[in-house]
Length: 357
Image (cartoon, rainbow, N blue to C red):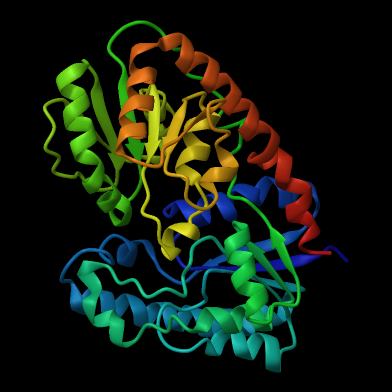
C-alpha cells in the first residue's frame, strides 16, 4: 500500500508564501515517490481576500465558521491517512483541539511544520479583536504531541526540543531552481535597482531603513523597488511599487540588481527563515541583511552578499554594490550556487520524503 498524507494548512492554495514553499512546492516530489496526499486548507479564497483588512467583521466571522466546518470534516477524513502534516496550525483561534483529537484519540502520526516564532503574540491591525481568541501557547503542545517536528531553522527546533519534541528535523524553506527560480540576473552598467519583497505584515521593517536610502539617493542614481501585496508610502524621491503576483514573481524579482532584508534583533526575527534572501540569491541577485538568525547561515559575508550590523555598514556595503556591477555579478553567482546547493527543492527533496518514513 502506498503511503498517504493529509496536509492541514491555514490558507487557500497558491496564496501564502509560507505554505506555497513549504508544502505546495513538494507536490511533484510526492507524486514522483508514489505518496498519496491531499492539501486541506482552513480558509477559503473569499475569506483570504479580506482577513487582513480592517472591518468586514461579519464576512470574517462567516469565513471562520465555514473553516471550522471544513476542519470537522477533515477530522474524519484524517482516519484514512497514514500521516497528518500540520503546517503552523489546524485552526486559527482557541486551543489545539483538532490536533489533540488526531494525536490522542485517533493515534495518528502527526508532523508539525513551522517557519516562524508563532508562539510570540502578534496580531495584525485589522484583527485586533482576535487577540482575545488567539492561543499562542498552543505551539508548545503541537511540538510535544508531534511524532516529528519540521522547523525552518535551528532556533525553531530549539524551541521544539525545549517543549518536549520527540524528534526534530531542520527543513529550510526552498525554491525550485529548475522549473521556477531558474533565471539569473544579468548585471550591467546603468541605473541600478535596489529591491525588497515581502508582505504587508513585514513592510514595517522598511521604516528604519528609509534614512539610509534617502541619504544614498542624494549620492547615487538608483531606484528602490518594493514588491508586496500592499503599497507602502515611502519618503523617497525615486521608488516603484509592483503588486505581488505569483505568475510574474520571478520576472519581477529580476528587475532588481540588489536585494535587501533589514530585520530587528528580536525573538520574532530569530524565528524568520530568510526567505527573502533565498529568493534574491536564487536569481543571482546579491543581498544585504542584518546578521539576525538564519541570515547568518544563508549569507557568507563578503562572498555572496553582506551582513550589516549598523547604519554605517549598510551605507558602505550598499553603495559598493550600487557603484560596481562586476561586484554584483560575482556575488550574485556565488549566491545562486549557495541556494542550489542548500536551499533548493532539488537539494531537500530526499529529506522531505524522509519525514514520512
